Length: 279
Ligand code: IVH
Image (tube, rainbow, N blue to C red; front, side):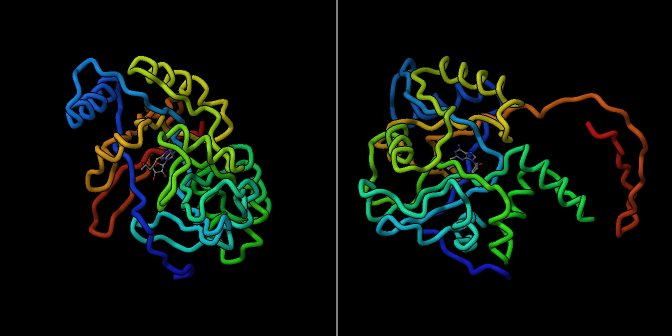
């Protein structure tokens, strides 16, 4: 194993998925039920792109970046501090207004253009191209030689936190705005919505921008704004009750079936595999 293991102070959770407006209405209703609120209660909810990258936990002690860890299995990740110190939009230090201890969580990603450039360079060097920007980001980060990571234009968006004894706000929105004030990159498309209708309108706005954002996203994440209510709602086994990922339907395109290969499995099972013209 190439990187040292680190146990997360608090687990790095995943999110439940919603695939339709009805699923989103169900999410809001579940929160009302759990909190004992009447049916017509509207919530303040943040809505922001779900970045298709790698989740990362950045631990700042005395305002210095002392540890960066991958998600791993959620309980234990890998220590990639040396590599993360080369990511240009991650500050090594936070300003005096930041608390003594905070773990900032967010996503490491490669832009679509930087991914295309990286693949062109790999192919020119006679190496195998990578499947997508997410794999490109993972491969760029998991380098034993941090100078290789430094040569890759990885970027970061901050959207959450782990251990944080002193939070700079009482709402999701205010905490993330404070992150921004400390010089951390936050997504410009994060919005504060005040009703189910506003949430879905922002989803459609982001969906319409998806192809022109310059980085891969696979949905919109909604988080209940009020942190006191988040605390009351708490968690299921692996995901918070106060957040959900509203996924986009898979991008569709038409292409040509060029051939059908028959793969022979170890047990002799035959599996037909379509060879499609790339789109
Ligand atoms: S919030 C407790 N916000 O999606 C909430 N996650 O399926 C923690 N992700 O592991 C996650 N963009 O890596 C959150 N704006 C966003 C996100 C986001 C991407 C990833 C994250 C997480 C996974 C959950």
